[in-house]
Amino acid sequence: MLGGVLGDANLHLPFYVAAALSAANFVYGYFMVPESLPAGRREPFKLARLNPLSALLRLVQRKDIRGLVIVITLATFAQMMLQSTWVLYTTFRFDWTPRDNGIALFCVGLGSVVVQAGLLGILIRRFGEVRLSLLALTSGMLTFIAYGLATEGWTMYVFILANVLAYATGPALQGLVSKSSPPEQQGELMGSLQSIGSLGVIVTPLLGTAILGAVSRLPQDDWRVGSSFFVCAGMQAVALLVAWRYFRRHGQAIKQA
Image 1 (cartoon, rainbow, N blue to C red):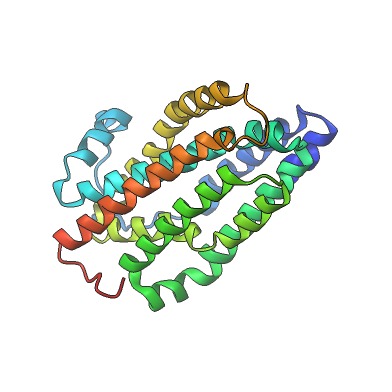
Image 2 (cartoon, one colour):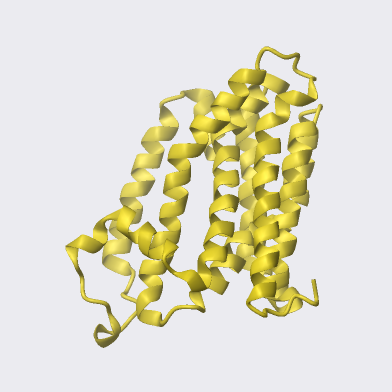
């Protein structure tokens, strides 16, 4: 919302405000956030471990969680493609302004806060992390399809707010992954998972904008204009299948699903 309002006034302004927020975040983290582990349980620092590619390689080599890593990668890439093409898509198809997109992304943030800060514990107790992961992936897949088929801009807000369970995808999957490692390795593990998102930021804009470029010659109301979202839905569908098979193979209780 803030980015949309500021961008409506001056397209440069959101970047300056983002820089100030990042600086404030650094200062607060450095001086106020304590180390989560006592000195005796911390892994020794090694310069070689800063290599992001080696961190990804170690993550892939974890055979016990390889299926979950694939699921997280596909779900993350789908989300990154959505984020990198959203404004281009809504501007082309619905003639949205920065303010319109700011309001839409405010709805996304609101849904995320409500679920992850308020409802996540309730959802995990009600469904369990396994079932919640499957339901969240399914919700995301169906919503991507709905985004691609939408012909009226206002329906995008409805789909965003209806996609409540999808906001639990990351926390539920990461919770399952974290339980597979001892406490002294969880920081590195979570950092490696975050690097998947960084890789997605590199790859998915290339793919998403190429798809949008290919369909941009079509009429605004042609269903094929939503092809980038259909690809995202395909990623989610594969992630759902891999997750289902992983949980079955590892004997996790999915009878409830």
